[in-house]
Amino acid sequence: MDVLSIQHLAKSFGNTSVLRDVSLSVSESSVFGFIGANGAGKTTTMKIALGLLRADGGEVSICGEHMRFGMTATNRHVGYLPDVPEFYNYLRPKEYLRLCGQIAGLDEATIKHRSSELIELVGLHGVKKKIGGFSRGMKQRLGVAQALINEPRLLICDEPTSALDPLGRKETLGLLRQISGKTTVVFSTHVLSDVERICDRIAVLAGGTIALEGTLAELKTRHQADGLQIEFASEADLERFCAGVPERILRKSERANTELTLHVRDLAAAQRASLQLLSAEDILPVRFELLEPNIEDLFLEAVA
Amino acid sequence: MKAYLAFCKKELVESWRTYRLVIMLAVFVLFGILSPATAKLLPKLLDGADMGGGVIIHMPTPTALDAWTQFFKNVGQMGMLVVVIVFCGIIATELNRGTLINVLTKGMRRSTVILAKFTVAAAIWAVSYLVCLGVTYCYTAYYWPGKALPHAALAFVAPWVFGLLLIALLILGGVCFKSLYGSLLTTGGVIVVMNLAGLIPQSAKYNPVTLSAGTLELLTKAKAPSDFIPALAICLALTAALIVASVLLFNHKQL
Image 1 (cartoon, chains in turn blue, red):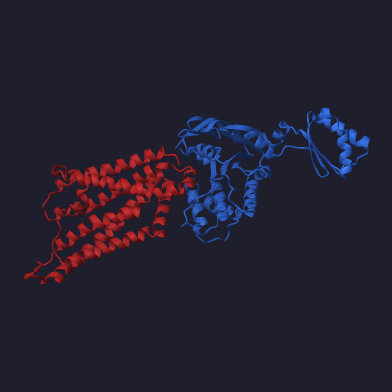
Image 2 (cartoon, chains in turn orange, green; image 1 turned 90 degrees about the horizontal axis):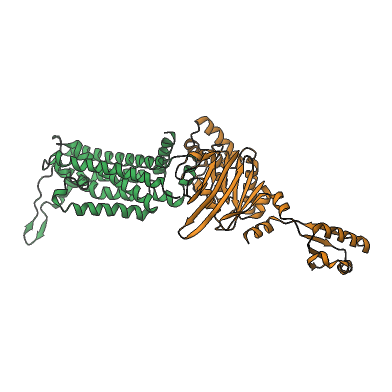
């Protein structure tokens, strides 16, 4: 069953149409990367799914239940980590988690157990000071803990790493990966390396619609490489190779020192021809590889 | 219910740790002391004072009624202003900072936020007012022992009910405008309209603003309880209506 299903979502702010027709579904126990440029509508989509914003059109279901704006019933399945989580600064972390647990309807024993477990998980064990004295990274980690207090089936994170230093980013991503076994994670970002690091599936939001969706492997296959890169031992080898490359297979070529990049019409034919040429010229390349599209290429292609 | 109680507790902790409760108690204890003290000491200070040109002030002997007059003045004017200042950010601050997002996405109903906030604010106002009333009562009974006050219950409940109306207005303003200024302007605007309506003598009986200080006239027997009951009923109904309106508006508020 899909934990989150969004169908034909539309939303405008005044005359600005942010979402035109967004449809996506997230299956259980996956880490779903929701990618888009700044202002693409990632936060808007998430807030609509949480019942915080009203959609102009479309439907959202969470764990099979229809979500209604302003109503919070479906949120019992959800944990939410905002991009900049705001807390009651006068509370201590355990007091805050207790409040969240009570609001989520947990009993005292469960709250106590879960709070200790989560405080340990996010590395805030032994921290007694009030939240007002927390650093940005500590607040983000407490944000993860509060989002998980009710053992949600779906964790929605809005750019959880965008304002963190490399260490904080690594910690937060590690946490998300760690919990993804039990909880489905949807996480929006424009940091593409984060997506490659932890996501099973991705969707790219561009122009108010989902421009691209699938697993990273699927997308890379779908957007097949059209290039070869060969590194030669010397420029002389490179020159000899270039002189023999059949024009018919090439779209264009780029040279950088002893490295040659070939963009070709038919990849299999080009591979065969290149290997034959190397063999015929008795050239031993240092490196011979297919140019796979990376997530940045996919993203740029989608938003172009 | 559990979420409501948890949020009420959070509101109480917030009131304590952000000094809202302490400020309310301190100010109203001060008013409680000042009312009888002013009534007792002012005549002593002014009596026999030479104003020049042969005019000498002769002050009458102060009575318990003078202390209660001061009490209604202090509570009805400065006291209400303190209530407005202390509670003006009750909703607006949370909406502005985004602190409600985490609790609402835990499945807590939006109506619970409004009801819990109103409950705790009303309770703090009640405790502060009762302390003020108690202090004034004790000093007044000490300095001017004897006489029971006529219609005391209605006279003393009325300002508290008017304070509830102010809190409800502040909540509605906060929900509508998400800002302190919005809360203050909404409340201020309604009070100005009520005061303008008070210029029409026939409206006094129904105007909630008469409850803030006007019930002194019950103690002096210048007016009967029936003169205040309609205003009290309207004030309570208006408070309830404002809270319902706040809940309905908040349910449709984009956050």
